[in-house]
Image 1 (cartoon, helix red, strand yellow):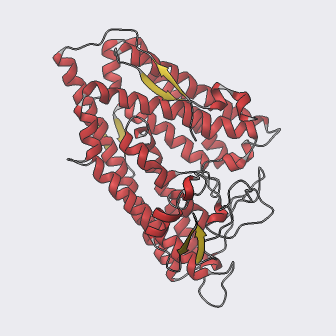
Image 2: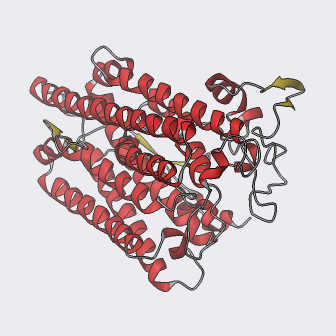
Length: 420
């Protein structure tokens, strides 16, 4: 996606007192500590997923597949909370596509229903099916894919020939391999891949079970390696930590850029509003597992985390410290109070979607044409996210920062373009 940009322009003078600079540095230390913890937790849960995948491949069973799915779902909770570190931090934004790119043309990886939306005539590789084809031509070159490795996935297949839909790595590639396609449209039900798709020899379904298992293992190993890289970037001495601490004014701008871009263009626009406009479950973020309600919710929680300077880890412990909220409150208490209230409101609106999904109305059902209750829930979340973005604009002004560019979305800024 290449969303448009709009600017949040500050209208007050830059405050330059040394004490304020010290306060900003303390806020940035908290921000980096939360990032370090979030990526460390993402890595730890991905390593648990890696172990569950190894057990599934070693002895496929209903129970082993369910355990791998549970591990994948658990891994999404800390990772989604790290998405607020995107956009303002180039090191993260340039890396993110390797681990969370979506949507994907799943036929690049494995078999698909030939009557489904996976048949994408605009993408020559949408039905490549690497699992079934150990040798193929890509970019005019003969590719030897007899051995499926992390390097093959990450360096050859992922976004092959610059096509963003050629997603071969990350959480969603693993998700597809565990769940399979969700062929239910906006009706109840997630993907239903059988455990026998990983059965070696007799009992194998879907064909090429050995290669499917190899792809799943390699994709999971690559995910772990990519998360190791980012966790190191935020640890003491890491490049991302150093970059955000180098210039306090730019560092604070990075926080607000990440908050605003995720809140507005990415979450409210590309991930939520667009799917509702099209009534299309293919635009659902975690579309194979029907876990989108959780992904949206924890994105919202992550935005609030970085503003309040506090993150609750999977073990219940907390990483916290001097917050951006306190910094804004010192400059303009009313702006801080309004933004905190709106962050709580957006998390509550996303929580209502989560509660409805857990109560039996999955997110893809909410997208269905004529589902007024689902539409109301989704539009409530969009409105709350847009409202808090306006207050993020006010926070930028209150702190006297220079221009902060926030990602936009045609679904919010130019709706007619969506249908052209």
